[in-house]
Every structure is written in structure tokens, then in C-alpha cells.
Image (cartoon, rainbow, N blue to C red; front, side, top):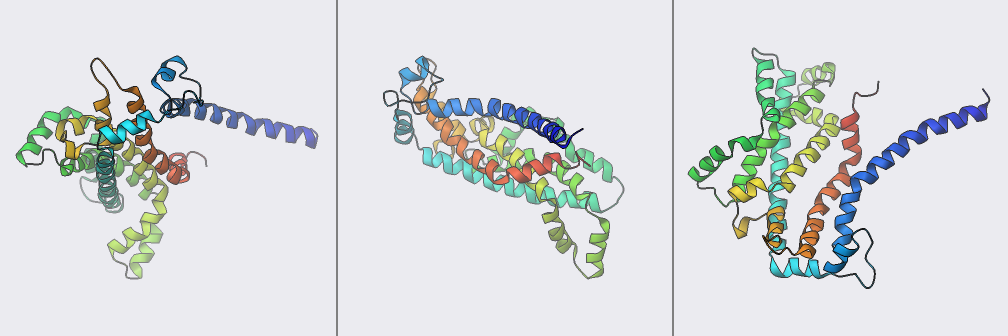
Length: 281
């Protein structure tokens, strides 16, 4: 086979996966783009030409004006940001420490304890909504961001422990033993290992953030007050039984997607590395 033919074959082999990737990306981004472009249209244009980009005749900021004038959207955004950031921080910290202990120390019941901590992945936390509501009410935490943070930490810990444990088990034991010989404490060794599993940490952060940020169930049950509403719950006030303000709904959804997209852009490389780690040898 000539060198030209080999080069052509190689280009064809790389072009096919890229084409498939672009196709999947377009399919995934289409609903997002549809929401964004329609948020800048008049209500008539949303229903008459939903697939067209805004024109000078159809362009409108009515939805964004309604969101900021009729709702405390800045407060909703702040509440969601506080709950999400604190929840993710606690999930990653507690999950990483538990994963380090399970992967590093051998003791009776280690596999059973790891299995017990991972059961939350298989059992939805929403099944315990009634019990959670009673507990939150008994602790006088109804309509507080603390209640949401505690629930989301409990919801995200099983996935965090399961994923980080697998990655921490792959860190060479010789590295940790060398640190112990040099007199490093267990906390110091934990701090040394954490950067080595950074792709896994980024993966957990992204997969944990999205359900927390987009959740409607627990904010509606535990913190429906005006002062504690989140972005997703706040957007529901524009949806009525008989009349819905679609301009405001699409505008609020567009604003709510911004933090998720920013986080994905920041951690996209680490996310891909974490997902594909071990897939190719």
C-alpha cells in the first residue's frame, strides 16, 4: 500500500469518530439552543417560528424584563448558588475522606461498609421524602437552606464515595509508603493523593451539581418560602394552570443553565479524562 493510500485510510479512520462526536454534540445541544434563541423572541414568534433565530421584527427582551421585575430572581440565583457550592464542597470533602479510608485501610467489614455506603446510588432518596420532611420539621429547619444542603449531601455522598474509592485504589501503594517513611501524617498523605485523582473529583463535581441545581422536588417540599426559593422553583411561578408566560419561562431557564455550562467548560477536560480513565490501555 502506498504512503498516500495509508494517509487517506488514516484520515478516514479519524474522521468517522469525529463525525459521530459532532452528531451527538449537535443532538445534545439542540434543545439548549432552542430554549436560548426562543427566550429572545416575542410570544407570537415563539409559537409561529420556533426554529428560526430572532430577527429585528421578532427580537424581544420581554421575558428577561419580566423575570427581573416580577420575581426576586437574583435572590433565587443566590440561594441556588449557595446551596450548590456548599453541598458540592461537603460531598467532595467527606466523600474523598471516606473513599481514602476504604481504599487504604484493611479491616473486618471493609467490603460490606463500602457496599452499604454505595446503596444510596441504587435507592432513590426521594422514597424517604415523608421521613425527611418529618425530620426536618422536628429539627425546625423547614424553609431553610440548611435543610436542602443536608439532603443534597446525603444524596451525593454514595456516588462520590463509590467513584473516588475506585480511583484512589489505583494510586501506587509505594508512593504512600514512601510518604509514611518520610514521616508524613495520614492527613498529609491524603492531601498528596487528592491531586492525583483530580479527574475523578471533577467528574463527581459535575455529576453531583446538575441534579442539585436542577432539582425541583426538595425545594418545593422543604423550602418553598419566598426567601429560600431556588432558581428552578422560582421559574415555576410563570407556569399557570390556564395561562403561562412562556417568555419569562424560557428566559429563566436560560439564566439557570449558565452556571452548569460554565462548570462544564471549566472541568470538561478533567471530566472526559475521568470518564474514559481505564477505557484504553
